[in-house]
Each structure stands twice: as structure tokens, then as C-alpha cells.
Length: 249
Image (tube, rainbow, N blue to C red):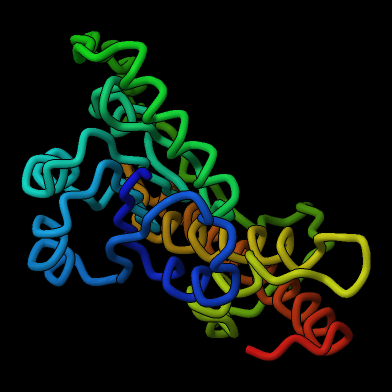
């Protein structure tokens, strides 16, 4: 049986809600602390690591290889919400499988078995290709005017609050909703959970985008506020569904 170690804020809640999803995989550790992971997982000798990062851009590229080496695992399934292409290209394809999350435990199980199958078919690690050179960033003209948001004559049909509402759902609660079974033949709680989680992640992502000038700063501020407003609306929809389905969180 494949041994799997799980690192991520939502994984423990997903396991509690749907333990049968990984029925033929031995989960040797599950938690959200990298420090606790480093302390306990090497003794468990997992075959595969499942590592969930909200924003992969903020993770040093040496972290995943170090966790693989320290634990003795042969593969890592790394899930993320948003990441720059240049960041994704830095991970070796032979040992690291990158997936945009969040994902259900059933989908994770499939990728765990695919990773093991890859190892059987290609026992020797494949030398990763050098990442393609990133296209040169366009040079901003010194005389280019700053973008005027809300300028006279601009038409806006959406009003968003200046101060976004705080998130209603934690990663643990969204993890439960990702695995919960609906009372009817649909998977709306699972899908809405993914949407809210992705909106939360893009909300954070847009706060840390690079700004070349004041126009960039204004655009990213606009993206942040609009995404936060969209997230708040979808949280209201999710709350209505949770009440309708009588889901306990």
C-alpha cells in the first residue's frame, strides 16, 4: 500500500469528513505545520507527499526538494491556487506533480497512484529541461500617462466597498465542504467551496503583484477590491446552500 503524507490547512478537515476517499492509501501523517511535518514525517518513510500551498510564489523553490529528501519520498504532489509561470517551471517534472487546487481527496488519490505508476514505468529520474527564458518585461515609457480609474465618462455598473469584508470561511471549513456529500444528486457544496477558495487565493495574490508605476498599483488595487467583493457574494451563496443542506461546520 502506498504511504502518503499530507501537508495543508484543509487536508485534516477533508480526511475527517471523507476518510474513505483514500481507502487504498495509507496516510502516515496529516497536518498544516511545516515544522511538525519535518519533525514527524521522515520517521514514517512515505512514498508520496501531498503539499498544498495557497500561494506558491511565496514558497522558496528549495522547500519542496528538501521535504522530499528529508522524508525519503519519491514524489510530491504540489497543489496551489495561483503561481507565476516562471515559478512553476522551476520544479522538476520527474518528481513533482503540480496541480491547481483545491482538489478533493478522490482526485488526490488518483494522482497518488499516477505518481507511483510513473515511478514504475520510469524508474530513473528524467533530467528536467531548462526552463524557457521568460519574455522580457515591456519597458514603461517615462512619458506614458498614468491610468485614470473612474475618469470622467467612464461607465461602471459595479460598486464595491472600499474596505473588503473579512472572509467568512476558513481553509478547514472549505476543506469539509470540498468533501461533503449533498442530500441531492449534485455537488454544489464541493464546487462552491472550490470557487470561494480560489477567490480567497486570488484576493491575496493580487495584493502582492509587482507594480512598475502608479497605474499598476491602481489596477492591482482594483483587482483586489473586486475579487474581495466577488468572494463575499459567493460566500453568501455558499452560506445559503449550507443552511439549505443543513451542513454542520
